[in-house]
Structures are given as structure tokens and as C-alpha cells.
Length: 76
Image 1 (cartoon, rainbow, N blue to C red):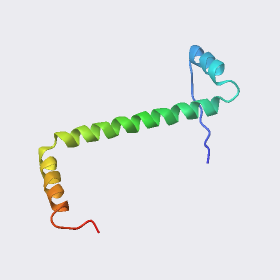
Image 2: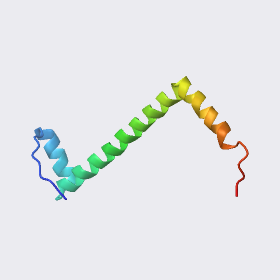
Image 3: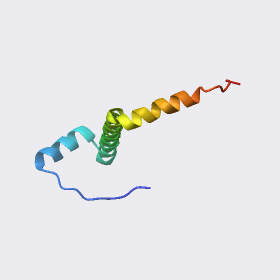
Image 4: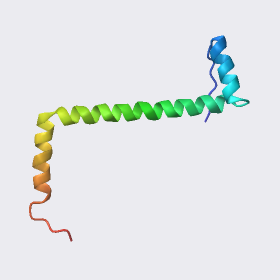
């Protein structure tokens, strides 16, 4: 599914877009947004991992679960 939208660009940005994107400005902008979304998700995941690593209660709970994982169960 696709959607149409209207955006406003200054002259310099518009000229750059036309120069770089050629005939398919939509594809170029879509690719930029996909890359930016990927970067955003990476940063959000990094932030969540850092918060998790700093949470001492959570780290203690993880250690308890690690111990539980190997409490006499065979690998069959």
C-alpha cells in the first residue's frame, strides 16, 4: 500500500533532491526513511540494553535464572 503526502522543501533541498534522486524522488525519500527508521530502532535497542545492564535488580534476576537453567536437566 502506498500513500501520498505533500511536503515543503526549501530551494536548496529541492534542487539537491532533484539532482540526487533523478526521476524517482519517492523511491529516494522512501529509502532515506527506511534507513532512518533502522537507525532509530538500533538506537532504541542500544538504549534499552544499556538501561537493562544498569538495572541491578534485573541483573540479579538474570543470574538466578541462569542457575535455574542448569539445575539437573539433561541436554536430551
